[in-house]
Each structure stands twice: as C-alpha cells, then as structure tokens.
Amino acid sequence: MNADWAGRTAVITGAASGFGLEASRIAARRGMNVVMADVQPDALELSAHEIEGLGAQVLALRVDVSKAAEVEALGERTKARFGAPHFVFNNAGVGSGGLIWEHSLKDWEWVIGVNLMGVAHGVRVFTPMMLAAAAADPAYRGHIVNTASMAGLVNMPNMGVYNVTKHGVVSLSETLFQDLALVTDQVQAHVLCPFFVATGIFKSERNRPADLSEAAAPTRSQMIAKAMGEKAVGSGKVTAAQVAQFVYDAMDEGRFYVFSHPHSLGAVEQRAQDVVSLRNPTDAFASRPEIGAQLREALRAKG
Image 1 (spheres, rainbow, N blue to C red):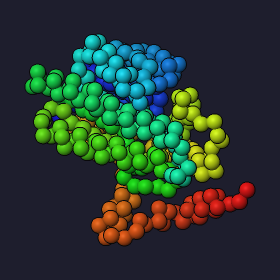
Image 2: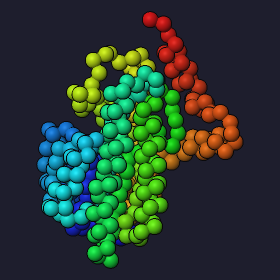
Image 3: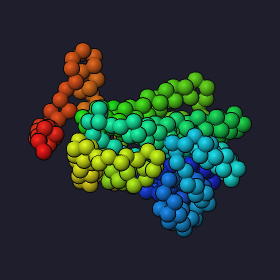
Image 4: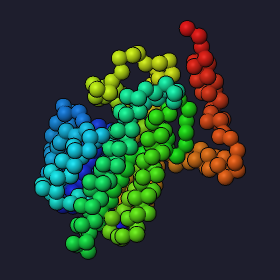
C-alpha cells in the first residue's frame, strides 16, 4: 500500500509513552498530523509539546479508551480537525497478572475494558469513517493497527486476564482483516504482538480508576507476576522505538502480523501442534525449566 504519509493523519492511543509516543514521533517525522490520546493528562501534555516541536499539527485529548463515549468524542474531534485519519493505532493497554481465579470482578472489568473494549471502540468508531473516505477518494489508503501481545498467541501461566484480553485482540484483528478484505482494498488491518519490551505496562496500576480499584492487598501470585514481569521487560533488548518502526514497516509493506521478537514464534508453533495433535498444553517453561521451578516454588511457599 502507499507509503507516502506526508499531510495524512494518525490517531494514536496510549500516545504519552511507550509504543504510542514512539509512533507519534515517527508520524511527526513523516509529516503527518498527529492525534494523541492518553489517560495521563500531564504526560500527554509533555508528549504533545514534544511532537509539536517536531513540526506536526497535534490534537491532544485525554481519553479513557474503556469509555465508549470518550472514544466516540475522539472520533468526532479528529474528523472535525483533520478529517478521516489514515492511520489508527489502537495501542492503549494495561498489564495485570496473577492466578486466574484470584482476579477480582474489578480486575476483569478494568483490564478487559482497556485492553479489549478499548480496541473494539477504536475499531467501531474509526473504521466506518475510513471506509467512507475510501469510497469518496480512490487514492485514500488507511491502516488500523491493534496492539495485542505474544500473550495473544500463547498462554503463559500466572497472566490470566491479560492473556484473555490479548487473545481477544488477535481474534478481533484477524476478523477485521478478513472483513475489510470483503469490502475494500483501500483499508487494511494489522496486529502488533510485542514480547518483552521496556515500556510502562507493568506500572499500569497508577492509572487504574478509583471505582475499579481494590481495597484488598494484592495476592502473592499477583505480586510475583508483577515482579517477574518488570524484570523481564526491564531486561528486554528491543526498544519501544524499534517496535514503533516495525509497525510503520508493516504498513508500508502491507503485512498483517507485526512481531518484536520473531524468534519467539517457536512457542506459537508448539501451541498449534498441541492443538492439532489433541495433546495437553506443553509446559510453558519447557525451554527455561529454572524459571518454571522458581515460579512454582514461590507460589507454593508457605507464609
């Protein structure tokens, strides 16, 4: 698809940090207008100022993507300022771990609301707008990129609610790709499945709404998941800037799947083999038994 981005418009959620901020920087360098949405107003203000300094026209809006009305308002403000966007990056997300039966109702509502419904809201708001633009202009080209995770293709233990939402995003994105292909050649879907990359994903609790916060202390499994996640992310060698560039490369090449760590696809192949062979899921730590042993010991420890 056409890779000439100058003068076109990007809508990016989770734009104040991580992949969203890096994608905003690339958009600005490519001469795009940038609509930046994030739930953190102070960080968003600073980030928007930086992107404006790169020469981009910026519309910065505080948005909680779990709220349908706020994403709808984002769409209306975008259309009024810049018209239909050409790149929609449904990227906002939160991290949460722990044994799956220990997630509270509020945990489920919070993580599903942001990670899955946030993407669903972005798709239902912006896709019709982009299809209308395509119908009106044969030269129009659009891309919708949804941030999932490798956790959307495999199921690591002690990450239950996060796995569920990211599998949902992969399914939503694959369906969107197929559905778009039925009706247009001008708008394409993509799914981003990063592995361990240094972002603020495991500090998500700081943005958890008060009405979905828990008074009870986190469980042992939840504390272990957070500590292990922060360690894994912190040790990652691939940067958020590199991942953002991978996203633009995939759009330029018309490629649906975007991976930060292609070597990790062996785990996806293993899972597929388990399914088609009708065998029980392979031990998630088969290649790193010492990690599995540490996790089991920590979860089974008394006191």
